[in-house]
Each structure stands twice: as C-alpha cells, then as structure tokens.
Length: 503
Image (cartoon, rainbow, N blue to C red; front, side, top):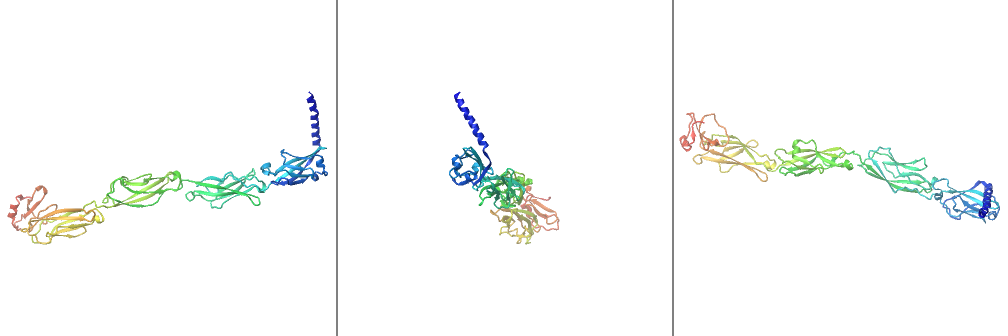
C-alpha cells in the first residue's frame, strides 16, 4: 500500500512534464541535409544559432539529440553548439528505396523543458551499380516467331535512387534483336527484347547477347548479364539427299545381300523433325524384288540375282521422310557390269545339200554367231581347222559362210568332219563348237546332212538312211528322172544297205 502511494505522485509528475513538454514544442522543424557516406564527426549545423539560443544555453539546459529510430546517429557538442555525425550514414540501409530519405530527430532542452523537431535529408550518392539477379539468362524462341515480337527479360536492381538509379538497358549490336527500356507503374525499369528479323534455326541456332544496365551517375555505373537465346526448331525443312543421283556399278554375279550403296539424306531440323527414315519410292515390282533399303541406315542391298543380258541398268527412286512428315526424293542409278557368263552361240541358217566334186567355192553352210555378253566378253573369233579344203568367210555382221576352198576328191577322202569353233575374248574365255560332216564325190550327189538344210533343186531323189534313222540323217543318191546321169550308183547302194526308194 505504501508503495502504491509513493508511485502515485510520480505518475502525476510524469504527466505534468509531458504536458509541459508538449506545450512548449516548436511546431516548425529545422531541416538539414548531408550526403550519405559522409565521414563520422563531420559538421552538419550550428544548433545554437539555428534554434535562437544564447551561448552556453545548450550546455546549461542539458541539451541532447534523439533520433526517431532510437539509434544514436547524431552527436551534439554542447560547448560549441555544433550538430555532428556520430557515424557514416548509409541511405540505402536507413531508407531502402524510399525517396526522399529523411532522418527525423529531436533536440531536448531542460529547465524549462523545450524540444525542437529536426529533419536530416540524407542525399544519395552513386555508390551502387545496377545488379542483375543472374549472370546469365536463358531465353527460348520458336524459329517461326515473327519480327516485332517482344520478350520480357529479368530486370536489374539499383539501390541508388533518382538519377543515380537505373536509367536504361542496352544490348550489343546485332541484326536480329534490340532492347527497349520499359517504365513500369511501380517505378521500376524493365528490359524488353524485341525481335527485328526473321529467325532461321538452321542458319543460326543460338545467340549470345550482352545485356547492360546503366545508371545515371557521373560517371555512370553498370553491370551486365549474358542473354543466351536458343532458337527452337519447327519442321520447316524437308530431308535432302547428299548426292542425287547416286551412280554405282555392280557386277552381275554379285551375291544376294550384297551392299550396293548407302544413301544419306540430311535434315537440318532438330530432334524428331531431323530424324530421317528411308524407303523405295513408287518402285516397280522388278525393283522391289531386286533391291531392298534399310529404313534406318539407308543401305540398299541385292535381293535377287542380276542378269546383264536381261537388264543392264536400274533407276531406283528413293524417299527420305522426317519425323514431321516432310520428305525428299533421290535417285540411284545402278549399272549392271557384265561378266563373261555366256558362251558364244552358233545358229545354222542354211545347209547346202549338193556339192559338185569338181566345183571350188561351193557354199556348204551359212550360219550366224552371237554372244550375249558385252564388251570383250561379247567379242568373238570364229575358226575351223586349217587342214581342210574349206574356208570361212565373214559376210554381214555376225554371219559367216562355209565354202569349199578346192575341189573335193571322193577317192582320196570320202567325207569331211568340220568343227566350227567360236571363242569369245572374255576372261576366262568361253567357246562353242559345232560339227558338220560333208561327203564328197557328187555331181549333185552324196552329201551327209546333220542338222538343218535346204534342197538345192525341186527334184525327187532316191535316198537312203545313213545310220540310226531316228537322227534324220540321210543320203541323196540319185534323181529319179532317167535323163540325169548318176555315177557309181550301184557301188553306193552296196555300201549303204539301208537305202530305200521312197521318202
């Protein structure tokens, strides 16, 4: 109870002092200014003069200075009446981005109690540079983005204010982009990247630009951030074959699954748009049966035996398709190279039946030779043995005539076996042989016929089989007409017991 009674007068005194204090407050504040970061102990003002007090009054009345933030930032020299800085003032620490930055303080005097309001304007100096939140920004833009498109970028922060704060953005010179400085309603300045030119990812897939933020100080302070721009692909390019047409040569005896050629198509798009698959384009059944293509690797392989004599070259149309459905066309020209896989052929066109004994250069046979191979493989040499009274005469193109070179003499040699040999010039050399048997001693008489032939006259003849009648070989013995002379017919009949009078 006693304690409460003792405390009660104190409450009354306090109330009285505050009442007096408030009643003697000076309504007009005194104002000063100082640059931030000014050294501690620096002079701000002479309070004795500014407050209209007498010399020594500040000391006599125990004057003191109190700041609103309860931090002793100011110092009062009672002897001189000077208001000084107790410490360096950092405007950004005290006020942040608030402008103007004012430090409120009061000057208290006692006996009688009196106080004065004071304001210290802390002026900004350019002690901060603009700062970007990241040293590098990543921006992704579709390559079909149109000129005039705006891409907002991350802004820089400058703790300074006014003209010392961030003023503008710049970007290094380039033909595709420029930067604008956009003033926002919140007072901040934002960089906007503006596209100036059509983009082509295949021409340039990435840009590295230097974005610079500058303040308005003197000299200006700045900082930079790297803007890395990735151009995203759209499927605007079709695959293109590296070579077209491809021209290859393949031996006709190449084995199945032989690798003929590997085609390659390039698509400068990225990702799935640049992935290429291969196929045969509008291929005929012959092409489909003969060749296959690997849709991934582009390898074209042989699936059917080649035959130069049947088809000498192929035109294979190919197609490359990307993941977006665009395609490109190519051509592969496959030339089949001949190998010597065909022997020469000999075809009898005419075989003459009657050979007079005493008539040289009588035509025995006309025949044609050919070789289905090409080049040296198809070049031929035609020959007969040298020791026979016959010669070969080339006539027209690959036609030859077999003729007698001298009169035939039955008494010395009754028959002649002629082997016609046709050899090509390929490697290895291939040949064909054909045998003809000729019987001499004939004035229109006696020639053995093998194979095919024609009668020289439209007469009726007596003939006899010369051997196995199933071979169709026979002898012409004599004409039936009596006015034609036949020599030594009886002898011929005796030597040929198979003779008969009808045919």
